[in-house]
Length: 153
Image (cartoon, rainbow, N blue to C red; front, side, top):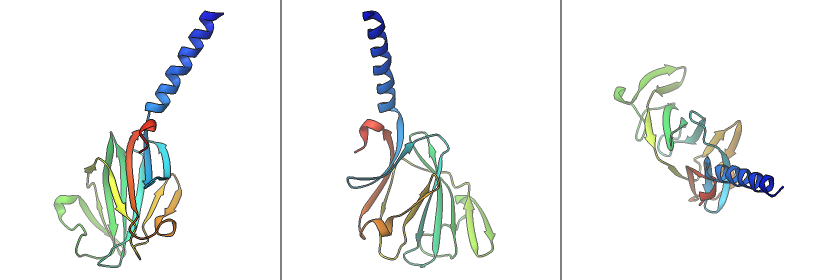
């Protein structure tokens, strides 16, 4: 009986350790946890915002890539400061009023964003839309990163 209890206790401890050390994707604002989900390779999410200079919508699509993120594409409606335009940055095409740059393949270990007034900063992940401008005041830092569950902050 003691051997069975020891065996099941060991299995439970290993399972708990695996769960705590499993890579997770976190979106946080200071001490506030906005989102937690499995950091599955290839999992995608979108960051949407209004460009601060051009005042036009921008949508960036990213994917989980190893221990960080890969910028897959950017969709925007005008050319200007801070917007990609070079053929070396990816495959460029136009769809209606939108310019799309695909296959950008820029790697980021983590992402840090700031809520700005009038930027309409939004993250869409797992079918959930987080309108960060409605959730937090301007200037709030938003961090997106991958870490084991036990390393939340």
